[in-house]
Image (cartoon, rainbow, N blue to C red; front, side, top):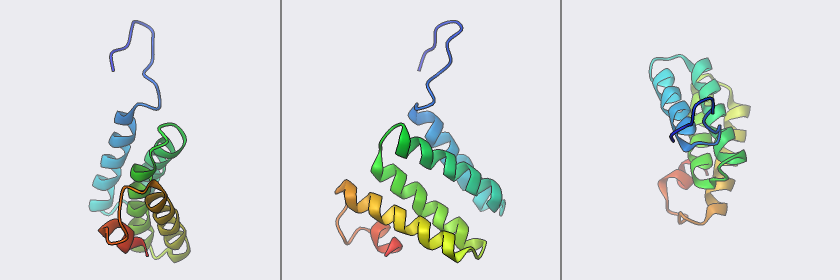
Length: 105
């Protein structure tokens, strides 16, 4: 996205969501689960509320669920997986045999 002088890029730019997601993956892989949680939530918010991309929202929520699992936050994990499953099923891009849906079930 090219911005004119004095203009800020739109928050809904897909690159912001992807940067948050990749940062979260890096944080998770180094054991910084609280930061991973923070960045996954930011990515999920953009996908859900600004880009309206259900499949990407579902995948990010699935990843957030794994972070909750690593932190032994089972209630939050179940809620995150439920939201992921709803988004992935609702998007109808994936069949019921899809690994992401199977993982959340």
